[in-house]
Each structure stands twice: as C-alpha cells, then as structure tokens.
Amino acid sequence: MRPQLFCLPHAGGSSAGFAPWSRHVASHVRVRPVELPGRGTRWDEPPPDRLATLVVDLATRIRAEADGPYLLYGHSFGALLAYELAHALRPSLGEPAALLVSGRNGPGVSHPSIPLYGLPRDRLLEQLRELDGVPIALLDKPDLIDPFLPVLRADARLAELYRRGRHPVLSCPVRALAGESDPLVDPAGLHRWSEETTADCLVEIVPAGHMLASRPAFLAWLRRTLNALTAEA
Image 1 (cartoon, rainbow, N blue to C red):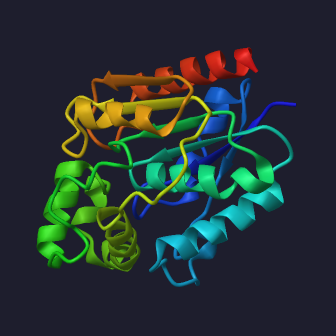
Image 2: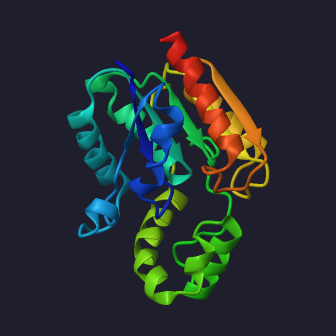
C-alpha cells in the first residue's frame, strides 16, 4: 500500500490548496490534506491561539486516519506544524518515513521579518502582496479578503512567535526546499534543518518566491523527492 502524505498549509491556508496534488504524485503516495480550525470544512471553529493545542488537535486527527507508513509535508507555518507533529506522533505512530518542508528556515531559527499578525490592515495586505500570500484578484475585494484575515493573523502569530522546544533529534530523512527569492528563507537558515535529524537532510533552492507550490520547479522537486523516498522504502 502506498504511504500517506499528510500535508500542512501555510498561514491562512486550507486543505483545498493540496487538492491538485493527487494527480501529480498519486503513483507514489496517497495525499491527505490536513484541515486546520477556522477554514474550509472547519470554518465554524475558532482559529488556533496556542500552538500546543493545535498540534494536539491535528495529531489526534492524523492518528485516526493513519493506516501505515506516512510522510509529513508543510510549507512555511505548515513546515513548523509538520516538524512539531513528527515529534507529537512519534510515541503512537513512530516517526514519519520522511519530513518534507518548504518556505521556512530550520525551527531553531527565529522568524526573520517584521511580525505580520499585528499590522494594520493596509500594511498587512501590502506585505501579503510582496509574499504572493493572497491571490491578486482578492486583494481589492474587501468582502472576500476581510473574512480571511483573522485566520491569517492567528496563524501568523503562532509562526512568528515560534520558538523551538526541547525536542530530541529525529531519525527520519528531511527534505527542505525554498525559492531563491523567498524573503523569509536564507541558505544558511534552510540548511539548519540538518540539525533536526540524524538521517540525511537534503536541501534545494529553486527559481521561485515564497509561495512556490504551484511552480513547475516545486512540482518537479516533489515528484523527484517522493520517487526517491518511496523507492527506498
């Protein structure tokens, strides 16, 4: 049976962003998007205000769905969630077959930019425009963008205030990716993912910005990475 790939979204993101992935990697894994409170099918739930509470919630949901070997993937804020879940799931499911992350320096590196979560609305939208964090078509439509902002602020607060806990080092492979023009990642910080595992950590930088998941270079990396990891299993 193909392993499951549990996918964690960026700040403000939802599971819908992973819907197209199955057609790209279905021969390697079963894609399992993870929905966070306050969006998508969990729209009526309050957005998370404590990282520990969110990790417990998501770990419970993943344990209920897991049926064998699994991998974790997360982008930006989702990379931190994937990392925390690798530790939270360790006692019950064992470590993931691999931890895949993008758009985030290693968890031992503090967030590199000014905090977004407390910015005034116009300044926040300006920053999101620079990060390609919201589709341009939505930026000038308050009726569509404003309901999305509280969830984004809640996620951004957790990401920007994050500090690595006293976790033991993992023993699963780590694969880390970033766009070369991503203002939130630098090569030295990306390589610090290697501190989090005793296994191999492969780091790659591709032509892209922060929001790279739809870029051909990202999809090529994802297929190549999953092909190698599942061939080794």
